[in-house]
Amino acid sequence: MTLRRDSQLDKIALVTGCSSGIGLATAIELAKNGYTTYAGLRDLDRKQDLEAAAQKENLELNLIQLDIAKDDSVKNAIEKITSEHGRLDVLVNNAGYGYFGSVESTSIEEFKEQFDTDFFGALRMIQNVLPTMRKQESGHIINVTSVAGFMGFPVVAAYVTSKFALEGLTDCLRQELFEEDRSKRIHVVAIEPGIVDTKFYQNMKTAVNANPESPNSIPRYNKIVAGFQKNAGELFKNAMKPEKVARKIIYILNEEEPEPRYRIGYDADQYWADKSSVTPIEFEKIVRAMVTEIIPDQESS
Image (cartoon, rainbow, N blue to C red):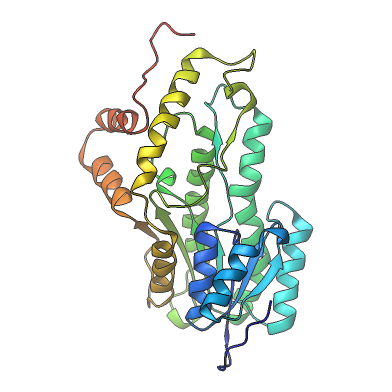
């Protein structure tokens, strides 16, 4: 797709997971703010919403096939961008999904599948863009984590642990890339959105043994999953629009010295305030009350 703008763009950005939601909104916002923007999609057949949004704004946007769970796909996409422009200024690691399932009912293979996208996918992207950013002595790497990166929820264990891992990776990378000279610094930031009005919930997978129909399902956890799903509709009624996250990313890119992480949304701020102001046991009670009305009986097995 080529919808040309009059001005010559000189900053190059790449966003993963752009078929909908935060990725789509971020790609559009970057293009509106003068970035030559590459929008990564695992499946280019799912480009319709992105193309429509770009055409509505009369924007130039470059669609690129990118499956962050595959080494060759990541390598080819980065090489294409850097060979065309000689640089890459912004990477937004957004692509990801969630898994329903307790620690006990989610298999090792399902945990690996979750991590291969939500954690190792971001790591693949980072390792492939860093040589270019180090050579140009500048850049921004923005990792989209979640409130699930600083607080644990029941029955989404694989998703939460992948986001905790991404938060830790962000902290390590910031330290490794730190330069006293701000003009030569690569900025690494985690953003922690609360509930966002996207297709994330509808696209969540369920671990095989977390399905109540599975002969190996465990009633104790089935109750919690049912409660979580029952309340999810209410939680999403007041969800913020993905454009709010996209605008925060632009704000971060314009900061002289970005913070390590940014919470986005009233709910994210409230969760953090609760976690910071009550005891750990009290906070666990708040989380349980928030995500489910059904607490398993202690004798359930």
